[in-house]
Image (tube, rainbow, N blue to C red; front, side, top):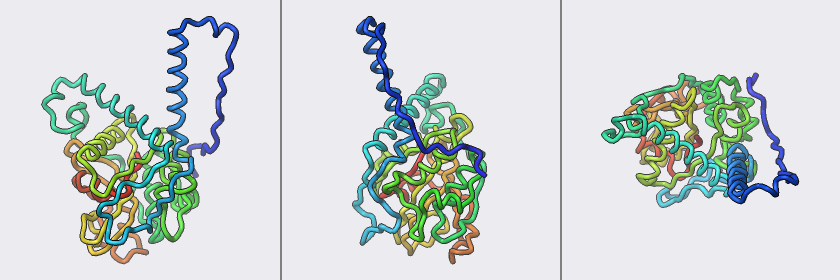
Length: 300
């Protein structure tokens, strides 16, 4: 049973002016207006994943691979929500930079912020129960790291998982961040799209998002939506001659964020013929990880 109440409805708050409000000084009025606007933007973060989004399904594999593909088209609400979260993460890391006297001499985001060079959340890997259950397994693993129990069958129902897998986005919004947000209160997940060949700036953003989420508060995991192309980079143990769409739980980092640690639900999955060669826990250079996530992205 889940230990967090599901929240699916949000009540709009309507501002009602009172007679005395008209007497406020212009500066105070402007400040109040900015505060109201900021509050409105912040309320968008938890509901952006519930708003309709472009349909992007895992079976949508481009003919000839993903070369040249842009990141998935995103809803305007999700673009705004991610911008809000990115600004908050930047502020958090910069506040630590200012308190860390050796920041200027550091070569990675964790060092600059005075955070651990390596940190992993609790290992919660569980074999996916069906060959198309990587999404439900990833959500179940991630929630377990946040102290919430949600089995794969319930997760699959809430995600809308079918034999085609779990969508990146669809008419229900963004299934993975939506279900994560409905089942825990430690963070509000948003989706970040990546093109087939992420830029250095996108790599650095991923590293910063990873280090910030793993360290802030009790730490929370990220979800990665891998798009592995035959002959291209693959997750550890995944057959390199196959094109594979796969959700994974990103649970930590090392080398200050330059290496990504993750767990893979294919390990020990009886429904997948090549599962024996896939470790439960693995690490990849973050530059390789973002390329694997390219043409899909990650939820943080």
